[in-house]
Length: 126
Image (cartoon, rainbow, N blue to C red):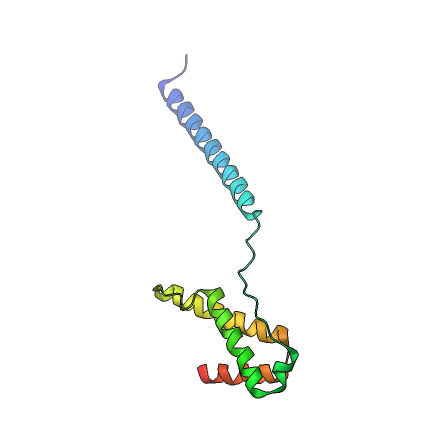
């Protein structure tokens, strides 16, 4: 015969083992879920095509016109001026998106006059 205390000790030990096994199983399940989500590819970022000619960069006026087109495209891509109201957080993210998109476009086009126009614009903001 077992003592009454022995039954309580065995029952508690069994409960602890069951709880530990359940926690371990739940942890493994959560890790598998995270791995599945991490492997889902991200959607490509939105883009807007801007047309220009090489001749546009031969004059200050032509360069300024291309720069205005790039700013407009960056605004569209980042959701600025679409008529809707943005929260403060959304506004900050949209502005950061705009600045990054515009700087990236200027860098990719890589024309000295365009870079100069962009530098003047960013100094005015700062």
